[in-house]
Amino acid sequence: MTIAERTREAPAEAAGQEDPRMGMEDVLRRQRAAFEAERPVSRKIRDDRLRRTIDLLKTHQDALAAAMNEDFCGRPPLMGKFADVLPAVKALAHARKHLKSWMRPERRSVDFPLNLLGAKAWVSWEPKGVVGVISPWNFPVNLTFAPLAGIFAAGNRAMIKPSEFTPATSALIAELIARYFDETEAAVFTGGPEVGAAFASLPFDHLLFTGATGIARHVMRAAAENLVPVTLELGGKSPAILTPSADLDRAAYRIIAGKMMNAGQICLAPDYALVPRKHEEAFVAALEEVASALYPQVKDNPNYTAVINRRHKERLLGYVRDAEAKGARVRVVNPAGERFDPDDNSNVLPLHILTDVSDEMTVMQEEIFGPLLPVKSYETLEEAIAYVNAHPRPLGLYVFGERESEIDQVLQRTISGGVTVNDVMWHVAVEDLPFGGIGPSGMGVYHGRDGFRSFSHPRSILRQPKIDVLKLSGAIPPYGKALERTLKMQMKG
Image (tube, rainbow, N blue to C red; front, side, top):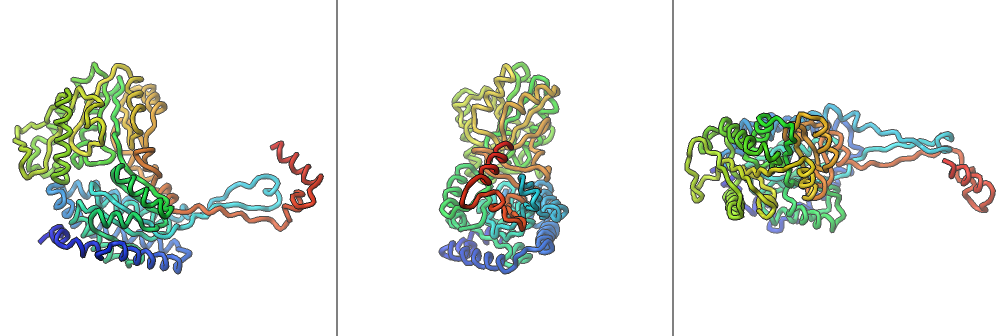
């Protein structure tokens, strides 16, 4: 019996209690008590937790990749290690390398005349306490463990709710966390939506949610009941803009390579392409050629990832049917001429390229999260920029071009969570860059120093001089000429 089968047969055991909130509240209480008893959290303790997490991932990378392959019913294990395990290890190692400098108090300036009198000010980066993590199914290892880099580096403890859509991976994560950490350091709670809802309602000191925008609204509403600060890592329709000077072949290769990794089930995947009308046919042909070369066959291809489940497959096919009914042209990239029966048991879908798309189509309204790529043409670059700006701000934006003036025009006139120029998604791999969305695509950032700061409290500290500042300035009764002189002098500044 597989891990997934055991998990599906024992949902009550996975949740831990009939009332899932009771067990989670107890762990939260014990984690918070242990946190208070441990303070101040030394660099040695933080580094040890980071080190143990790295050891967990490196030691069990094969088992984690196998569990993800089982959950997806087809996900290349090597790709799983590259896209899930490696980024988490790099994030944790980056935190270990820079932990000492991150923890260092930050000196701040003091205004005149306090600076001349000996006052000093600084910011101390304090741990918040217990951080909740709700991680998604598309990169279940990476998006569970990479946030622990900032959480542990900041001196916090963690409670984790992984996705029920990847039961084998979630069960293995729970088993490994329990093996490497005391429950008061890190704990995992598996289960379905009822467990997730109870988890989101806990009075954490911070909550990180990665997932769909619709679910994020419920999470944020639940967190608001306890005034829990949230970091929301969502998604949206990330555009790839080909400027008039773009190299079509290079753009097609990099867009397909990024889009088809994990079968498009990536929050940062290019959701649609904007291309000059005169280059549309050549670009679509280049997309087909690249996809056919990378995936000469799709079914039973060990290098191709399946859609996570039947429901999501039906959702994607529904997008295609809706688009065709409203006038879109659909090209299915199927170089081996394989038969794809909508009613078979496989969740493998080939790449569908859609042209003649319009905003009335569901595929242009909802985040795709699968191997569908709409291509929309434009006459002028200004028109393409206006199209992006007329829609919700995306998590990622990708601009391809050979002229710096065109690239600058796109960067200066658009707003997005992050940008990669002449490629897609790679900004997320630079650990020293903050990662996060804006508006409907997210709230707050993490990764690197920015993650450390997101999960820390910047505590302002001012040390006053021995001189009585209020008395010197005349700011104590009876008010008179001394205070008038102070006001006059300060107003000049």
